[in-house]
Length: 138
Image 1 (cartoon, rainbow, N blue to C red):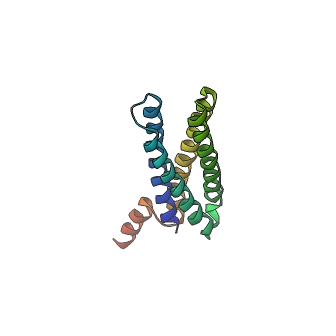
Image 2: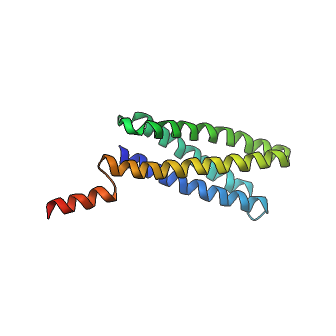
Image 3: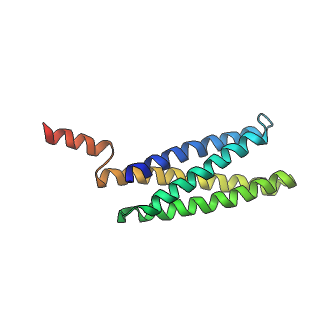
Protein backbone atom coordinates (compact mmCIF):
# COMPACT_ATOMS: atom_id res chain seq x y z
CA UNK A 1 0.00 0.00 0.00
CA UNK A 2 2.90 2.41 0.69
CA UNK A 3 4.10 2.29 -2.90
CA UNK A 4 0.57 3.12 -4.08
CA UNK A 5 0.40 6.03 -1.63
CA UNK A 6 3.77 7.34 -2.77
CA UNK A 7 2.70 7.16 -6.42
CA UNK A 8 -0.60 8.89 -5.66
CA UNK A 9 1.20 11.76 -3.93
CA UNK A 10 3.54 12.10 -6.92
CA UNK A 11 0.72 12.10 -9.47
CA UNK A 12 -1.30 14.54 -7.37
CA UNK A 13 1.69 16.89 -7.11
CA UNK A 14 2.19 16.86 -10.88
CA UNK A 15 -1.49 17.57 -11.57
CA UNK A 16 -1.47 20.36 -8.95
CA UNK A 17 1.53 21.91 -10.70
CA UNK A 18 -0.36 21.80 -14.02
CA UNK A 19 -3.30 23.41 -12.22
CA UNK A 20 -1.04 26.23 -11.02
CA UNK A 21 0.15 26.79 -14.58
CA UNK A 22 -3.44 26.85 -15.84
CA UNK A 23 -4.32 29.37 -13.13
CA UNK A 24 -1.56 31.66 -14.37
CA UNK A 25 -2.69 31.24 -17.96
CA UNK A 26 -6.27 31.97 -16.87
CA UNK A 27 -5.13 35.16 -15.15
CA UNK A 28 -3.82 36.47 -18.47
CA UNK A 29 -6.80 35.11 -20.48
CA UNK A 30 -4.79 32.48 -22.38
CA UNK A 31 -7.21 29.70 -21.32
CA UNK A 32 -10.87 29.61 -20.37
CA UNK A 33 -12.02 29.07 -16.79
CA UNK A 34 -13.49 25.72 -17.89
CA UNK A 35 -10.04 24.11 -18.29
CA UNK A 36 -8.97 25.34 -14.86
CA UNK A 37 -12.21 24.05 -13.30
CA UNK A 38 -11.94 20.61 -14.95
CA UNK A 39 -8.34 20.10 -13.81
CA UNK A 40 -9.35 21.41 -10.37
CA UNK A 41 -11.90 18.64 -10.02
CA UNK A 42 -9.32 16.11 -11.21
CA UNK A 43 -7.05 17.37 -8.40
CA UNK A 44 -9.99 17.02 -6.00
CA UNK A 45 -10.60 13.41 -7.08
CA UNK A 46 -6.89 12.58 -6.71
CA UNK A 47 -6.86 14.17 -3.25
CA UNK A 48 -9.80 12.00 -2.21
CA UNK A 49 -8.11 8.86 -3.56
CA UNK A 50 -4.84 9.77 -1.84
CA UNK A 51 -6.60 10.43 1.46
CA UNK A 52 -8.53 7.14 1.31
CA UNK A 53 -5.36 5.14 0.61
CA UNK A 54 -3.44 6.99 3.33
CA UNK A 55 -6.15 6.52 5.95
CA UNK A 56 -6.41 2.79 5.18
CA UNK A 57 -2.66 2.32 5.64
CA UNK A 58 -1.57 0.23 8.61
CA UNK A 59 2.07 1.36 8.59
CA UNK A 60 2.69 3.50 11.67
CA UNK A 61 5.39 5.59 9.94
CA UNK A 62 2.74 6.85 7.53
CA UNK A 63 0.82 8.74 10.24
CA UNK A 64 2.30 12.05 9.09
CA UNK A 65 1.29 11.27 5.50
CA UNK A 66 -2.22 10.47 6.70
CA UNK A 67 -2.46 13.87 8.37
CA UNK A 68 -1.01 15.59 5.31
CA UNK A 69 -3.52 13.91 3.01
CA UNK A 70 -6.41 15.09 5.21
CA UNK A 71 -4.93 18.61 5.30
CA UNK A 72 -4.49 18.56 1.53
CA UNK A 73 -8.11 17.50 1.06
CA UNK A 74 -9.34 20.25 3.41
CA UNK A 75 -7.27 22.93 1.67
CA UNK A 76 -8.55 21.83 -1.73
CA UNK A 77 -12.15 22.12 -0.50
CA UNK A 78 -11.38 25.67 0.67
CA UNK A 79 -9.64 26.34 -2.65
CA UNK A 80 -12.67 25.24 -4.68
CA UNK A 81 -14.92 27.57 -2.69
CA UNK A 82 -12.44 30.43 -3.07
CA UNK A 83 -12.12 29.78 -6.80
CA UNK A 84 -15.83 29.95 -7.51
CA UNK A 85 -16.22 33.04 -5.28
CA UNK A 86 -13.34 34.70 -7.14
CA UNK A 87 -14.98 33.92 -10.50
CA UNK A 88 -18.35 35.25 -9.32
CA UNK A 89 -17.09 38.43 -7.67
CA UNK A 90 -13.95 39.24 -9.67
CA UNK A 91 -12.35 40.34 -6.38
CA UNK A 92 -8.60 40.95 -6.53
CA UNK A 93 -8.28 40.19 -2.82
CA UNK A 94 -9.96 36.80 -3.20
CA UNK A 95 -7.78 36.11 -6.25
CA UNK A 96 -4.63 36.69 -4.18
CA UNK A 97 -5.93 34.50 -1.36
CA UNK A 98 -6.81 31.82 -3.92
CA UNK A 99 -3.25 32.02 -5.29
CA UNK A 100 -1.66 31.88 -1.81
CA UNK A 101 -3.73 28.81 -0.87
CA UNK A 102 -2.74 27.21 -4.21
CA UNK A 103 0.93 27.64 -3.35
CA UNK A 104 0.30 26.07 0.06
CA UNK A 105 -1.48 23.14 -1.55
CA UNK A 106 1.39 22.60 -3.97
CA UNK A 107 3.97 22.88 -1.18
CA UNK A 108 2.10 20.38 0.97
CA UNK A 109 1.70 17.89 -1.89
CA UNK A 110 5.35 18.21 -2.92
CA UNK A 111 6.50 17.73 0.69
CA UNK A 112 4.25 14.68 1.08
CA UNK A 113 5.57 13.28 -2.19
CA UNK A 114 9.18 13.62 -1.02
CA UNK A 115 8.36 12.26 2.44
CA UNK A 116 6.58 9.24 0.98
CA UNK A 117 9.58 8.57 -1.23
CA UNK A 118 11.95 8.58 1.77
CA UNK A 119 9.50 6.51 3.80
CA UNK A 120 9.46 3.97 0.98
CA UNK A 121 13.20 3.52 1.33
CA UNK A 122 12.91 2.81 5.04
CA UNK A 123 10.04 0.30 4.85
CA UNK A 124 11.30 -1.78 1.94
CA UNK A 125 10.17 -0.36 -1.36
CA UNK A 126 11.60 2.24 -3.71
CA UNK A 127 14.88 2.54 -5.60
CA UNK A 128 17.20 2.00 -2.65
CA UNK A 129 15.42 -1.17 -1.54
CA UNK A 130 15.66 -2.76 -4.98
CA UNK A 131 19.38 -1.96 -5.21
CA UNK A 132 20.11 -3.59 -1.86
CA UNK A 133 18.13 -6.67 -2.87
CA UNK A 134 20.24 -7.02 -6.01
CA UNK A 135 23.42 -6.76 -3.91
CA UNK A 136 22.20 -9.50 -1.56
CA UNK A 137 21.51 -11.83 -4.46
CA UNK A 138 25.03 -11.42 -5.89
